[in-house]
Image (cartoon, rainbow, N blue to C red):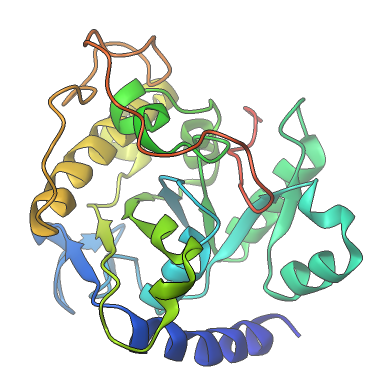
Length: 273
């Protein structure tokens, strides 16, 4: 079923988000527009994703609604990496599997999932991941902690696939029933950054992950400003010295904006291959 099912779900789901929301979409200038920039000779889409070839989309993760909002925004199909717990429910496993999603065991190394991921990239697919590894709203977000799970940098190096950083802001608004009412009032933001090519960092996985963290911070600042949100000064970076999973930023305490409970539907970056 695969891509046909994905298209059908996206077509049906788009209407609910279209009539309920007034989103802010931000694409960094270097990739904005239909002919903006190239990655390994491949022109980028207006949404910042290369037109063809293997690609990794790495996004922040505050709620399960990040997934449908990304599906709505990106014209290219996304193969999401999800958690094994979600696939224990047969109905959900069928639904996710037909959306081209696949499971990852986050509690331990999962070579099978890494092989599936690499096979998807070898086929030129666009794989979407949440390198924080779980829902991380508020102060637990990478934009405050500066921390992501190891692995995505090495996957990029091994596959040669560029990483497109994405920040989704206020997706958790859709937990409220009123947000679904057809009044074009729900505000959320999606910020898409410049693709990070492994060749830019001489194949250094840690440098790639540090660049990804810096991109998350930069995009969070940009989309927050455009949504009219007051910025908290305790952001990580803008470029944190050392590897991406170095300790939390040297900043004072920040106010959490949500719950940190891990929920079904969260995804994680794979371990180093």
